[in-house]
Length: 246
Image (cartoon, rainbow, N blue to C red):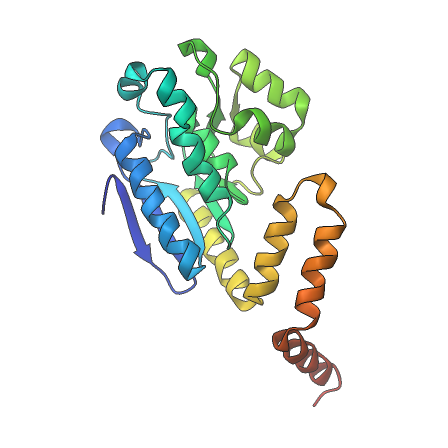
């Protein structure tokens, strides 16, 4: 473990656990640095990341003691923003398992994931304006893309915190399961992803992250590369042979 982040190797994914239970996994500079180190590795190794929290909490927010001392230059540096952008841009999927509180910076880390799975105790939202700041690490642009502008505005402007059922109904999480089952579901998804063509998965993620103005050109360009791939030919040949009973 380094900087409050416990990293474990699994067969088809890397499991990263935010592990500052005495601080409800509050996101401080050390944890951000540890996440950057993990990103540097996964940008090269290109493995699926499952991220969760310890002690029944995902992350209750940023570390307020550190946040209170930050000034304008720190805001412009985008300390959490740049880290969460890097996580969002990882070449392979990121799956977040959200247990208990995912508030403030913890919620914004969750929004950066490709897939989110909740537990019945999930409480997720952005109460930043009550602390005299805004949710500046991704919530103002990512949340409305996930749940729509009306609900995102209520969460961001009125400090509404969503429970598990509300998050599921809004499409913020894809499932609500007990903690062990939620982690098992994440592992199952990672296994399924590992069985697919990595190049096609990475191309799909790039297309998903592209702005609307980039479509359909980005889709056609990615498909053109894949159409020339030996792996595409191999997988399609195997499919046709299975279908023919050979």
